[in-house]
Image (cartoon, rainbow, N blue to C red; front, side):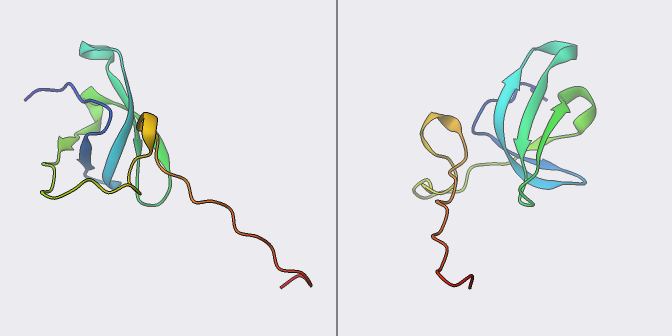
Length: 86
């Protein structure tokens, strides 16, 4: 199995679920990745311990909400607060 993961790869972790690789560092025994998971957590994982499996990309156009330009996840724009504290 190729343990080299790239930014933008979708992976599955046995405990945390499916996630998007935001950053990849190092190689070999010291390779690590920063993964964004659906619960809005970001976790830096050592590839040799994480038991990650790469997910095949789904057919169709890429979703703009998944990744913004520059490989960073898109962030929702903050809403305006209502007057009167509601």
